Amino acid sequence: MPGLTPEQIQALMSGSGRKGLYRDKAVEFLNSGEGGVCVQDEWALEFDGKSAATIKQGFQNVKDNTKNPVEGAENLLVINNDDKTFLINTANANVPTTESAEAESVEA
Image (cartoon, rainbow, N blue to C red; front, top):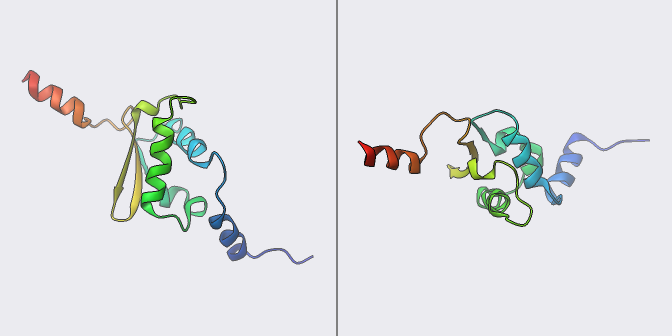
């Protein structure tokens, strides 16, 4: 039986939206211990063919979901830069967030 080529599989997977993909990847990232990742580099196959704006909106929806919240979502930053989407876990990134930097400057 002839199987599908890797190119055919990738084309099929990039065109189909899997329910829960953004949530699953957000949980995977938040539990990874990493400070930040580039979505298109980390999960190239899963997000192939999706624009940075679409990817950002998908992760932002996961972050803002109050009915079925993801543990640690309050630490998730979703940033687009140069047609790439980056996830930052402020709990692991060891860099001040805008809010904490503002608080420090007020205290000084």
